[in-house]
Image (cartoon, one colour):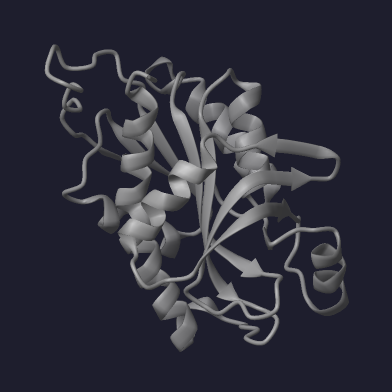
Length: 228
């Protein structure tokens, strides 16, 4: 795991800095995703420590890694963002588009994401000019192609990946906390990819993933500010 540290957020309207800020844990599956997230976090420290956790591929690995990470007292109250790449399900999606989930689904388990609208706004500011989609992000234990992709789209899902739903489910099972999922599309109905690392769309998605990291810190910081 890679940890970044930032300063406490500025107090609203003067006064004392906010204290006891919970840390932020950013979970991903692949080494290339971790590289993008780690490099994107350099110089953008949030109000509390942020950790990039590589869980490994698939829902079981994600769930196991989250349970282990959140068992550490230093991370027990962490806000959790599931991030990395995904497959878009909606016609018209392109590699490099972003998906901000308002909920994740895995079987009959639905997890609502925290302050998704605020995160969408932060993502749009972080990567101006990129298309940001919002909707349900569904989970799978395998790569989804062809007819199965159409069936998932018919269920109302906007995109699919193998770890986000399991990650957020495990995070909430360990205790109440803010959770979110932000994914970058690497393949879509009209742009199916086979190898992320060897295609132009994959390179573009890597750059977008690296650029979106400051939005996670902005979202996290907003959760720590008093509501009016």
